[in-house]
Length: 448
Ligand SMILES: CCOCCOc1ccc(-c2cn(C[C@@H]3NC[C@@H](O)[C@H]3O)nn2)cc1
Image 1 (cartoon, rainbow, N blue to C red):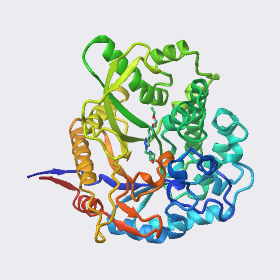
Image 2: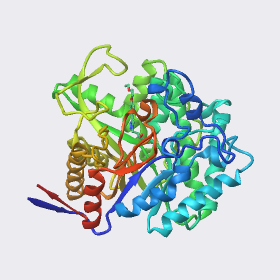
Image 3: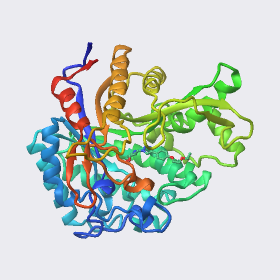
């Protein structure tokens, strides 16, 4: 047996997001979000699931926070539902929305849990979508008004802010692939959405500094590691394009103030280009305090002429997969974080999402999710490798605290340390909850 000790100030946490857990979709003055509309549209979500009730955390947050306290986490990452604050996206504030999040945040702080708040985790007010959503540059101004309201309202309570969760999902998955809300399938639109998110991010960081808000601010891209199938030039270049689709495109602007030129050229061949206005790139690279990284998986990539968008195919190398079909590739986490540090410097990093989908349920009142424990252990071991290799890693926030609405997969896919029975809403800590509690309490991992 060997033991891995983490730094004494290493932050252990767990994460969720508003639309995925809250429910109360039309309560207390909340406006419609694009996910209310998308999930209510037949055929968009597995089993026709929606977030109308979800985990009912809007009403059960005190029970959830009591479980978080039992888990012993120091950080809880959650998101604000923008339509609870501005039901029409801008204009009149909804006082009941603010009141809810004050009660929630106060309860976290009362229990010694640091709130890590994501301002945008995909639930755009539908009223803004009807005016073009993120394809309309004016949405940037609505986002700035929302962010300013939250900064001023929660000054001194919330000290860790994340502007956007997974810009790749908001742009590519939601506006090119079309699997998520609002479900568009247009590459030019996806590039425009990504750019507007970046401009909104940069302006928000600048405003955060100008207001002198106490705390730190960052963004949370999801990164994916594509390893070349061979060292043949065409395989190396194919993997580089596929990696850049997920990674460089969403990191270069933040740290270099430019998009990766080889990808700009590639997209131009596909008939799409970024519409950059004077001053945009300077705004986007406004320095951040930390980077949140969401990592789940990776795969081997091999050149294949005229295949899909990047002349690149993924090779199923026989890695074990989770119940959502993603490869278990812990080495990819090490490769991603060391590559990121080598490329962009020692930016402080929190893993803001990492976890596994396993659909185990209770048997005799216990959820035996050993595979999730194995997944978490394999990835947490890689974190220690990263720290030893000079990655400026500050913490690990697992996805997810509890089973919840997994977007287009609905409730069919479970990522939680806590099992949720969606018929009774009963919460049952899984074996992984107790495993993670031991890690959080001791700050070390014993590898059997
Ligand atoms: C090429 C075709 O692809 C079709 C589906 O493609 C994807 C890609 C990525 C995802 C995905 C889901 N998650 C977990 C969430 N992260 C945020 C949090 O809300 C979790 O629920 N991360 N990435 C889903 C689908």
